[in-house]
Length: 381
Image (cartoon, rainbow, N blue to C red; front, side, top):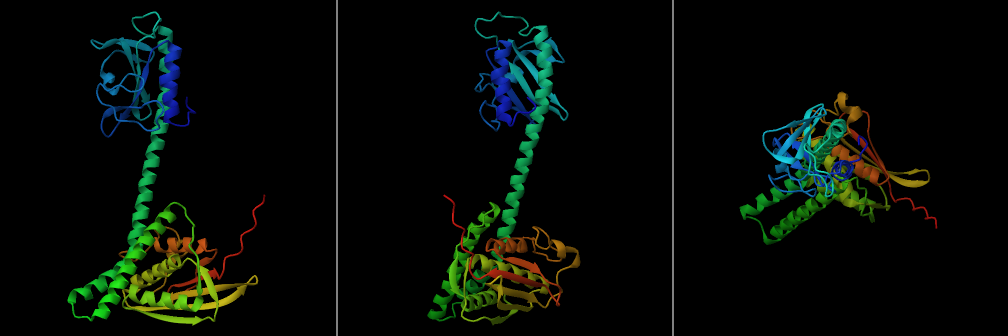
């Protein structure tokens, strides 16, 4: 019983195997909900408890309402007769270290069995009490595991929500800025169309970011690679940062030639956007962000070395060793500590690395990416 893998297995032992061993027609397992201060019925075959309604029968034929109808109470091997209730029902409290965790409801004798009053003999009562003590410990463990899983799900949901809020700020800044210019009504039709197009592109990007964040939360790693001229891609990234972090001066130093690169453009853009947002926050919205790109050979293959650095105060010494971990942040009013964790994940999905370099001054990051993914090894037959 203590080794049952889940609540369903425990319920099966107590509501199927136990009644056969005792010669009873049915039993029921009720869980005690501490928040609601009420019993709920655990139906055989289900891994989660279903709220019990007074008088509503479960699969075993006894519902949560039967918790108040048994005439007999089993405590420490002794049957205690109550003033009222059903003569063929025995209530067995399941007492664990934390208190009451449930109730085992033993029903009427099976057809053909000798009817007894009380329904359990002395020997069976002692055995059922010992079994109930072990069942209570097992039930407490399963309920604790269920609470842990629930809290982990809530934590994961909070992580995902924080990640979305962090990464949405850039595109939302673009949408807000251009929407404000449209309200004035003092722009030409050509400018109106251009700005409306930029707003639509930003909205499309938000949608892609939502999908990517879900992939990240699920432990994704899928890439939608496109092969593009490296110079044009870097220029597009720098131009996009000008709109995403207004007030920051973006300096581009792209010493690259005619090379091409195969990357997931949206994910790599998010990497740079996150770093630019961190620089903006550290500099109070005004400062210089430099993108410096070079191509070099590594193990005979061309790699992109992209330096991203600002002229701010740099990364605080106390978090330098943990700067790529989730929720690590310091000194930023709006920071969640997710931006660099997401960036590291996306760079590694490309087979690259991202590292924090010594101060120079300001925060200095180096992103290393292969221009083209290595060929996949042939699958064995």
